[in-house]
Length: 118
Length: 107
Image (cartoon, rainbow over all chains, first blue to last red; front, side, top):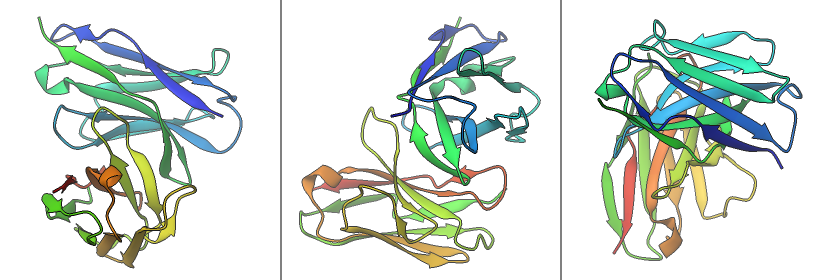
C-alpha cells in the first residue's frame, strides 16, 4: 500500500526558501500514470493547490505561486520535492504531498506544518 | 482560475438527519468535481469523484450529484463520525481549486 510522508524544516525565516521532501513508500514513484502534487492549508483555512510533477518531469504550477515554486522528482530515492522561495508569513501552512490519478487527488500524506517566522 | 463557492459555511445537524452541501463553480466544469472529507488534524479523504461516483470504501450514505456549475453532496442519515469539514475540488482546468469548506457539526 503506497504511503506518502512529508519531511523538512518546521521553521523557516522570512525571505528564505522553504524546502520539503515527500518520500513515497510501498511502491515506485515511477510506476503508473500519476502526478505527484503539493497542496497547502493555512491554519483554520481552506486548501490551495501549489503544483504537481509527472514522473517524466513535466510540471504544472499555480500561477499565484509560479514565480517562487519549483517541484522536482528524484526517482532514485523515490522522492519528490517542493521549493518555495522568498517566503513570508502568508506561506505559513500545513503542506501536504499527494498523488493524483486522473487529475483527482486520491492519496495524501499526513501533512507537515511549516511556520515562517524570524 | 475557477472559483468554487460552497454553501453553507457551517451546519449543525442532529444524528440521522440528512445533510446537503452545495458547490457552485464560476464557470462550467462538466463533471470534474470531487468531494473530500477532512477531520481535525487529518488529511482530506476522497469521498466522491466526478460529481457522483463513490470512491472505494466510502459509506453508501454519501452521494453526489450535479454537472456544469452546480453540484451537491448529500449525507443521508448523518452519523456522529461524519463531523468534519467537507471540500469540493475541481480538476477541469489548472490551477486546480477547492471550495472554502463546509463544517458539519453534530448537535
